Image 1: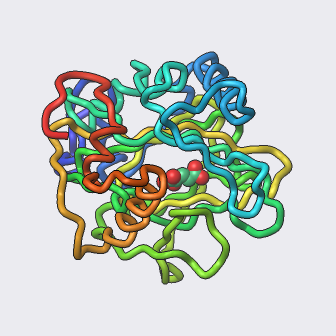
Image 2: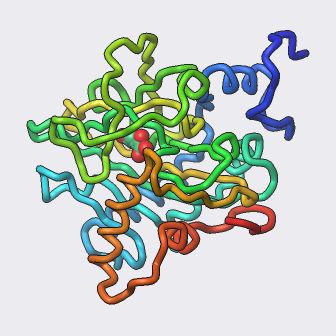
Length: 294
Ligand SMILES: O=C(O)CCC(=O)C(=O)O
C-alpha cells in the first residue's frame, strides 16, 4: 500500500512491524490499538506478581506501591518495576518492543512502568483518572520519540473504567497546563481543566492482551470503576535513548516536578543533591540497542 493519504509520516518509521495503514492511523489519531498482542501467560505471571507484592508475600524492592486515596485497603498501582524480573518480562517483551521501535527507533529506554489495578470505586469517584497528557510528567524530549504501551490484563469496558482518548489531540494541542481537579483524585493525578468543548472522545474497550500505543501529547484518561471487578492493565513508557533531559523550571511542568521532589525528600531524608532528571536516570532501563543521553 502506498502512502496516498498525503500525510507526511513524521512520527513513525518503517521497521516492517506496522503496516502503512497502521502508521497512518497513528500519525493522524495519536494512538494505535493492536488486538491480542501480549500472550496471556505473560499477563498471568504479572498478575500473580501483583497479588504477591500487594499482599506483602514478595518484598516490593525499589518499586512504589500505591493505594486509592479513599479506599486505603486497595492497592491501585505498582509503579517503577524495571528491576523486578517478573514484571520486566512485559516491559522487555519482543512483541511489545518491536512495535515500540516503530516510534522510537532502535535504541530504546523504558522510562516509566505501571501496573494499574483500578479497584471498584467505593463511592468517592477517586478510581477515575482525569484527562491528561503524559508528557506533562516527563523531563525529556523530543515528544515524538516517546510512546506509551498500555495492555489490558482483564476485560476493560466503560463499566469498569476503560481508557478514553481524544483522537488527534496530540497534533491539535501542545503541552497544556494541568492541575488537581476539584473532585477527589489520587495523588499526582493532575488533569487538564476546561475540556468541555472537546468533541470526539472515544472509549477503548479492550480484552486481555490487547495493547494500545499512544503519543505522549494524546489527551486521555479513564473513567470511574462502577463495576464490582478490578480493571487491571500493565503499561510502560518508552523513549529513544537519544532523547535528552530538559529543564522544567518555569514551565507548566514545574508543579508536578515540585510534587515529585517533595516525595523524594520524604523518602530519602538527608539526601539533598538529587535532581529531577537523576530520578529518571535511576528508574529507567535499556530494553534494546545502546544507552546514550538518557
Ligand atoms: O490506566 C488508567 O486508568 C490510566 C492510566 C494513565 O492514563 C496514566 O497513568 O497515564
